Length: 101
Image (cartoon, one colour):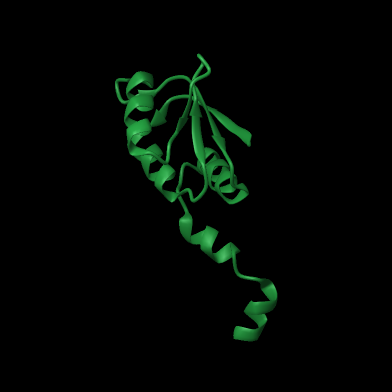
C-alpha cells in the first residue's frame, strides 16, 4: 500500500464519487493513525463526519491497494476530474486494437 496524497480541502460529493470509481482497497488514514476502509459505507460515514467542517475535508491521507486506483486518484488530484472511461480504455492491449481495426 502506498499513500497517494494528503487530503486537503476536498469537495465531499466529488470525493464520494471518486471512492465509488475505485475498484481495490481504499483507506482514509487520520492524523491519529486511524485507518478506515472507504469501500465500506459505514466507515465513510464515520470517517468523513469526523473530518468534515463546512463540507470540506481538512486533514487526512489516502492509501490504496490497487495501481489502477492510484492512477485514478492521481489523475483526480491533478485535473479534478473522475475519468473512469479512460481507465477502461487503458485496459485494452495495443495489439488487440490493431486486430479490431
